[in-house]
Amino acid sequence: MPRRKSKQNLCPNCGEQVKDPYKTWELIAPFPDSKMRITVTIMGMFECPKCGKKFRGVVSKVKLGGEQVEFDK
Ligand SMILES: [Zn+2]
Image (cartoon, rainbow, N blue to C red):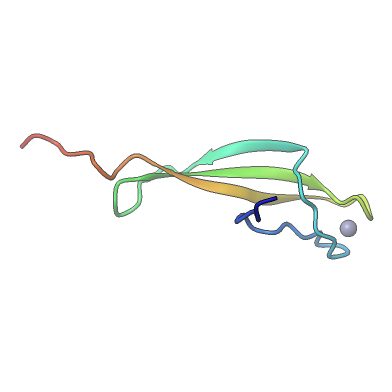
């Protein structure tokens, strides 16, 4: 099984690592970065299997667009 590069999501209550969010949604940055890419952050809601605490965390981040885009002058 390949190692996931994404951040660990640890329960803020007991420190247990929670692997999979039960709900996810996307947050799209309102402004592009310096390379004109839009950052899309996948957020998730996690529920700790140990203590039942629910918390939000970042699932992953994706950068869209930019690179090869050129405009006619
Ligand atoms: Zn917990």
